[in-house]
Image 1 (cartoon, one colour):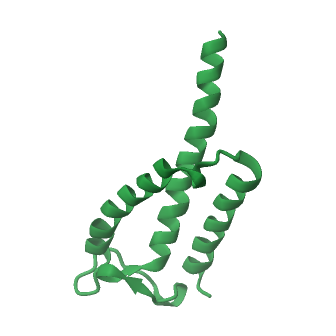
Image 2 (cartoon, rainbow, N blue to C red):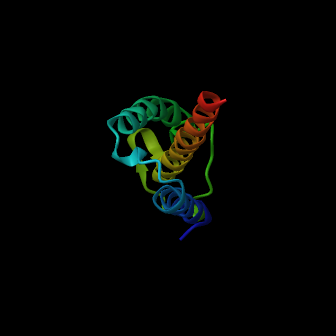
Image 3 (cartoon, rainbow, N blue to C red):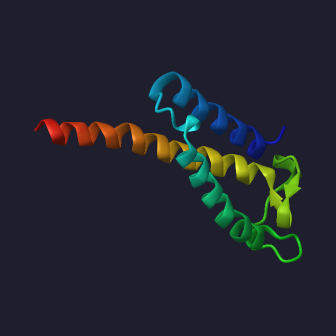
Amino acid sequence: MGVYTATALASLAIVVGLELLVLRTGIFRTLQYWLAMAIVMAFQVPVDGWLTKLSDPIVLYNSDHMTGWRAPWDIPVEDFVFGFAMVSLALMLWVRFGRHQTRNKEHA
C-alpha cells in the first residue's frame, strides 16, 4: 500500500473514530450532512477532474504511492477519501464547538 493511500485511509479512520468515540455530534445520521457532502462532491469532481486529468495534468501523483484507481475524469480515489475526511472533520468541529459557543452566549 502506498503512502498516499495509507494516509488517506488513516485520515478516514481517525475522523470516523473521532466522531463515533469523542465528538459524538451525530452528523452522520443527518440529512443535512449528506446533502452537504453531495454539494462538496458536485464541486470536487469537476475541479479535481480538471486538475488530475491524465491527458494534461496540473497536479501530478507518484503512482508508487497510491492505488492507481481513478474515478471520473481520472481522479485518484484517495482524493475522495481525503476530501470526505477533511470536510467531515470541519463540519464535526463546527457542530461541536459552534453549539458550545452558542450555549455559552445564551447563558451569559
